Length: 206
Image (tube, rainbow, N blue to C red; front, side, top):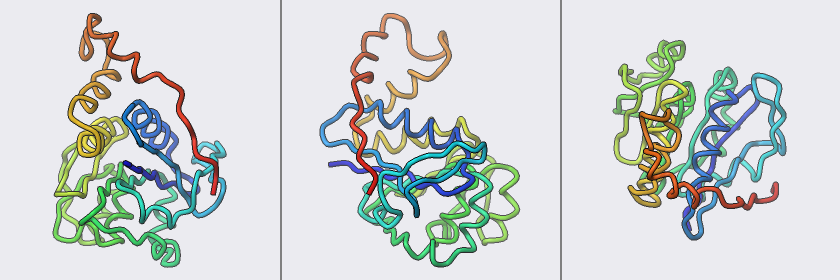
């Protein structure tokens, strides 16, 4: 079973969560599970949208892939040692990734030690202050750890996760499916999309 945990917190960036959630739930393989986890049953986005979680923050340690969203809330999280201590992650057996300022959390967890990374431009000085060399690329991966910079760079981050946990065919199909018409999926390939749009079973909050 492939278990994916998306970590959220108060004042997260809306598009980061919802684009991840949408793309990951387009995968239709056996025993594929995507959950939103946090320290509380609900968190509020930077635009004020209240979002329920499906599980506790410490459940991330049991996932095959752990993805961190971004947002102003990352600045509070990287100074909250109690919160960070609940993330007992292991890059030897887990895929660990972030979008934009989510990279700050990866840095505080030690996941970026000795690695280059990318992030959103406004987060670059903070990430560099944490001892990480920042490169101007949309996506950077070192083994099981990856960072993406810019909201739309999620297509590379999610494609990376899907290729690792499902296969390259699913990865390519999902990335092509969100590209503008004429730039991605050809119309004659459209029937392949139907397998993406089956009901998604959402786990209850725990």
